[in-house]
Structure formats: C-alpha cells, structure tokens
Image (cartoon, rainbow, N blue to C red; front, side):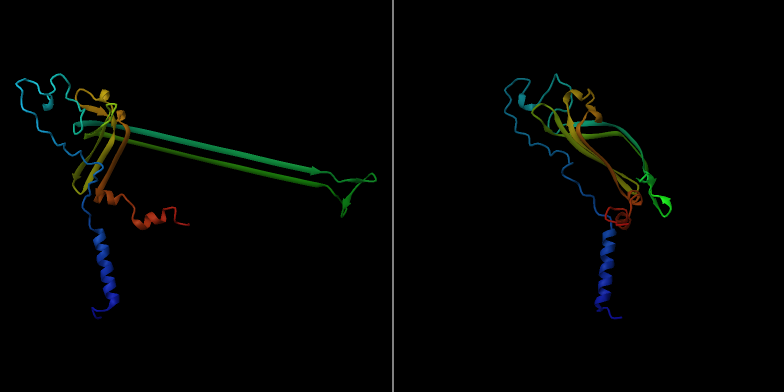
Length: 227
C-alpha cells in the first residue's frame, strides 16, 4: 500500500491526535487563586532623627496577625458536613357506584332476563419511598495571603496548595472573607469562620484517572442518553 494513500494518511493522523490527547498536559495555574503580587514599596523619606518612622511600618505594640494586603494567614480546615433526607408517600383510593334497575309499572326492568342494574367498582393505590444521604470531611491546614482589605476591615483571602505525591498531584484551594477578630494570636483562623468560603479539593494523575469514568461511559450515564 502506498504511503501517499489519503485513507492511510488520515488513519495515521487520527492516531497521532489521539496519542497527543492522552499525554499529560502541564499544570495550569489559575491567576484567580494565585498569591497577591508583592506591592511596590515607596521609598522612605529621609530619617529625621527619631526612632519611629511611620513610612517604615514598624509596629511595636500590635500582634503579628495578618491585616494588610500581602500578609500571610493560616487557615485550619475543619470542614465536616452530613446531610440526610428521607421521603415516603402512600396513597389509595377506592370508588364504588351501584344503580338499581328502574321500576316500570311496579316491575323491575330486565335485560335478557336479568335485572337492568348497573354497578361500578374502582380502586387505585400508589406507594413510593426514597432516601438520600451524604457526608464530607476535610481536615488540614493551608496558608493563604490577604488579597484585599475591605472598607469595614474584613480581609479577603485566597490561596492554593499543590502536593506532588508519587504518581499524582493533590490540589487544595480556598478563598473567602475573614474577620480580624476571628484571627488567633498564632495568626490562624478556622475554616468555619471564613465567610463566603469556596473550598475545593481535587487531584490529578494516575490515581485520579483510575477513579474517573471515561468519556464514553460518561455519555451513557448522562442526561443525553435516551435509554
């Protein structure tokens, strides 16, 4: 078979594209979760001979807790949720209708020698039950940076942690709003104290791929499958 055959070239090209798609893509870092870029520090004015200078950000009587853009804060992950729902429905209905044969000249009307009475009986029943339960737990620590300070003093924080373990990568991301009052003296805050929290825990690599369905299996289990 000649190598100039267009059918052969098409098969080879398709195979190369499939192999290229199977190659692990490099990790893409999302700038939405990236640490805040360091702020450009303005040049301090000449020393005037005093010990303390306001432009040097020397804090002698405050705790070393995060309160400015770019400061580091450790969040203690203490997420544990559990939901359960159960529903049971039972309905029944029974109908009965009886109409006696009409009386004509004192005699009950007959049809084919039988009384011309009418009787109807109906019965309907339905029983349904369903239950659902779900539980999640996430513990650990992740250190984030302050990305913005709101007008009321609250801090918007965000950050991510990548762990490369053997044949895969684990990713933890968190973002939300923290009150300065909730920050402990050791510069930590519980994740349950983070408002508008967005926490994600995902993985990449061989282990994650082994626990996920292929694209064809996902299609057969999707809502687009008519059967």
